[in-house]
Length: 603
Image (cartoon, rainbow, N blue to C red; front, top):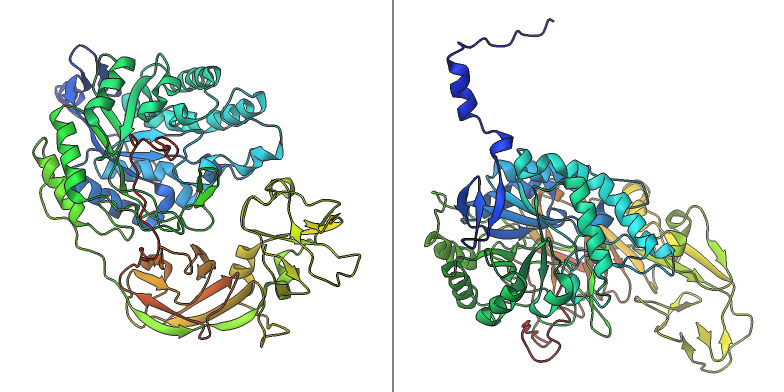
């Protein structure tokens, strides 16, 4: 078929249409230092933004969350780009499915939201390794977040792939990205390498041009090392902090231009073993209104937190690692399940005092579902599946090797050796110099012990099995569930599973694991994340409705329990989350507190 001819318009209409259509060369987002404000296309502009991470929300739910943010009165969405989410191996890039950040940019456009982009390379965000790829550590002497040539070479290679793809999305090119952050709260990092920051700034400019606004973000005590001439300086703090003092400090680094809080904390993150963190509505709204009265632009971190599916939850380092929970609910205005909360409506009311809020009600909470209890059945001990978990066989080494050294990015690995001497009496098994940097389980002849030197003898000749647990769950369990050779006495890590139908259309739900200890859960092959029921505070895992097969189709749930199974191996699906067990102390955080004021800064 011949292509259609272009529509012919009267010549008098063409100039009129040219005036009406948005022109990329007339679009601009700049700092007006004379009047301490931003200008969008030449007009005064103040952004009221919220953080949402596309990598913590199933793609099918992006539009729903963004629409609710816009209806809340926001005009900008801010988000990170986790490097390790997109470059799993050097030179291997993934922008498909839930990793299609350009589809997310398009969804933001459809929701009428501008974008503030934070591509790192380090992002923190309580994400696995702060977004840095684990393969960087295959060079043991590499110095991360510095001008180390090995690190810069990897960063340059990544950004030469990412940033040219971002370029068409810049606001002055017709896209929706109004500004881009360089690094992330770098002033809180011990290196304080100015050459590194200058290198990044130069790299961003060479790949993105001079028109895009580049900025830095730091807590108040990080401004000295985190700010850089030529990059607009912003700050972050929460409702409990001294706004006047912090903005006053910001003015020492950015004397003219709009005040910006790039991370105004609506809640806080959760650690395993501590209580669910919250921020009161009056505290959040009072601080927000005060900032808006000052004419400041603000981004609320988080506006919707989402979930650390799979193995992606990170850890903070405070002398020891404090692991983050699977839930990233954050006590945010939009809950982990995407529902508007009273905090959202209170924030919307404050915003409406300063700028127009879209007309119309917000969507109601999504339908929720209850089911169970369901009894799970033992599939077998982890060791029973070793041939399937590691089909290529073990790696041999005199001494144990790290995950990175054997190309195991995350998940689980089995280390095995054979004792050459008989141990006839209790002997200490220990690892010097804090040699285990993660959680380790030790088994002797299949019996579970507590967390390698045996007495004074260094254990050598190790077999290392990188375990492809996700592959086993996806490919083998639905087809050929194997039976344990010792089903009556499960010991150590064990697999349990069952199938269940949903007779109606279903809904969002929350998996409750009473009596289970610690492990990993899959629903229909999707890695839902880690549970640690015994430690808390999180007791349920969010299960989005799109993960479940409705109307009678069979769904499969698989658990890998690492420690102890309850006498009745049952689970339930609830219609509301349980994020806070009450047996742990509450964590209260303030950037301006006297003790450890900056240790947890860095998103």
